[in-house]
Image (cartoon, rainbow, N blue to C red; front, side, top):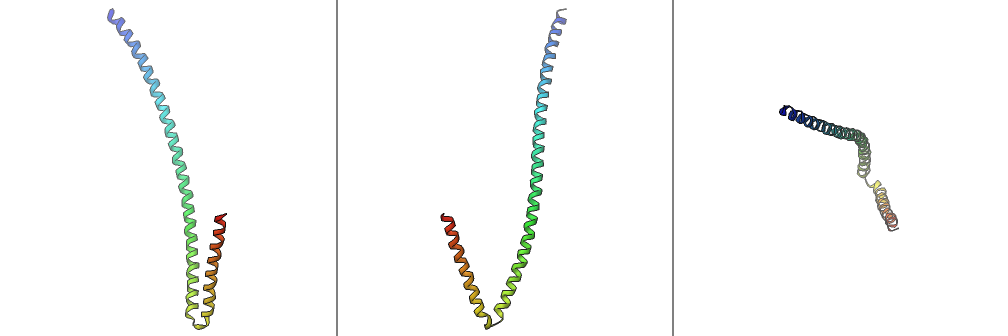
Length: 116
């Protein structure tokens, strides 16, 4: 009979330990679920940001394509003007002088803005 009393006492301890372990496991499961939920939110945010960046890069690619064609056309017209002979040399000198003037004016304007 002494064994039975000892076993029942041990059974009560085992039940209490099982309940504590069950409570601890439930708490850990809840913590894990919260972490998984946060990771899911972060993954969704990363996906949305990636989609926005891809749209932005696609737009930039289109802009660079149009700028490239515009620059190519300007270079072709400039090449035609240079190869046309002496009649355009005066125009070419005026154009170069204007570009140099614009550069110096821009430099002066930016230096005044930066100083203030």
